[in-house]
Length: 457
Ligand code: 4AD
Ligand code: MG
Image (cartoon, rainbow, N blue to C red):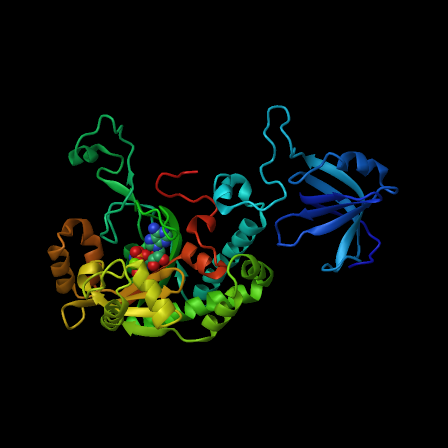
């Protein structure tokens, strides 16, 4: 309480220091929230502190003892009337003993520059705010599913199958690659066959959804996609709920409720950080999140979406890729649909089977599958999901058409052999959701250590 005469100790990193004749002001931040607390040192009362303070710069870690008092300064209710300071770790502003100066001096740094120092960028306002929102969001995800009776399932990171059939997998091996030739060599590998990092925990989640009814995963996924876009990472986190006895409509409703919940929770819990993003990163962000959180998502079939795109193409021909039924939506198409046609999030359903994964349930038309992608303005696809093919013959036929070897997926086919049920699920890219909520333009700035093609650090 301000005015309390007891002394308290606070610890953190110096954000700024201002040396006025009589008083030294230190803004201290420990990363627990955006705002720093001002600590004032009356030079006449704390002469010892002056010696410690005079060489101190941004980034130094200190322990400050003082009393919490009402602050006369505008914009802050309280401050610390400091009585002493202890230097914990220096961060010299100039080269010292061969150590280069602390790179985060008090000025605005570009996000590109900060990407070069992931080990330090968490101390900036922007990355600090992103990581707090990310953490709050992770808890919100668990609360959402826990409250709805979903069991949290840990699916393997190392796997032998390509769940998405997209072929962008990282190989895992203990073999000496300089001596390894051909696929046959993998028989001698650690697992007795080829193994990879998982692209999705979905197939394993399906097996447990047909045991526990409702499960979700929240773990890392790996894709060796060579696309260096602001929306792709080689290592990202995915949330994949899977629900038994659930059709595509139930799945869409769940996805919509889930996104509404995430937005509502962050609006409630991370107000200060969101205001920062609203002011500095994406003007209008909070208003948009509020209105999205309060409205149902539009739903449109792929065929109708394509018709809109084709109309736009005929009118102004303004896309790089000509929209055509049967082709996947390019990000420019997703942008146009969400920003120009719908002006908000939209769930697109019923994609042609050729552009979707083998496990999706075939519609009666024999051409489209019960897929659902949730697209949002600025980012495009944020969720991809579907009702799964629960009919053994239909699934096996589809696998054969695609040249997927049955022996690799025998375990998965067992779900359709024994007690098969309609079931559905989706995958949400966690970083894309963090991007959507914070307004951050580049996915590399919403994960502590981004991994992307050509960039490990
Ligand atoms: O649409 P995707 O590929 O779907 C699946 O993996 C399904 N197994 C999900 C399921 O039905 N259980 O990926 C799901 C989401 C995408 O919508 C996107 O948000 C995100 O994962 N995603 C990526 N995020 C970052 N970097 C990448 N390279 C991503 N690839 C997909
Ligand atoms: Mg997808």
